[in-house]
Image (cartoon, one colour):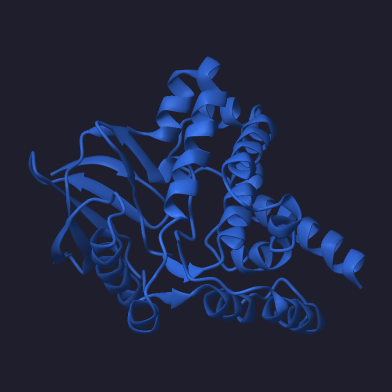
Length: 271
């Protein structure tokens, strides 16, 4: 099999002209892989553009998912290849996100199949060891007061999880959930502003994107706001708990330092 992509948690191998295997790295929780398998089928049934899933597989003690092969390029790659079109791609990212958030999850589907946004965030915040107990408790209490929602949220929506070809597909549903779109947008905004690329990404790509972070984030959020019914303050109020939950992810210390600054600036402003 030919490896065609990789990230921090998994590698993608082309199995045939019709399928690929997303093979998770050793130690990645099997329940998370099973959830991605099931949730991808659920969002597909709602009409959201995602690759078909064909089954689960185990190779040399690593678990993977067999997906439909899609002919296209990640939006991140297109941004790198065509830097003068960056604003257009940021607008495209926002349009796809707005489209996603129009999908409501039926009550029975939400209870039985989709994780709930605030429960996921609270669980992640509980596991963070870079914040004091007092900070975590205050953030958890604040999170509980934020408005719930019943829309499909991706949980990790960024340019490398959007594939552009004859259609626009949304990939990687490991963190898919039911919740408030404002929280989902807050996560994307943090990723655009502070997210670090996988170690395997070429240095010139990292340097190129580092210089346009603010522009990309600004164009994305401004266009999202013009196309949705949300106000920026509704998104901003989610940044603290979203950043706190992100500290649990497998990310470099440099990014964690930036997230802690976001958290504490809002924490002490609030208090």
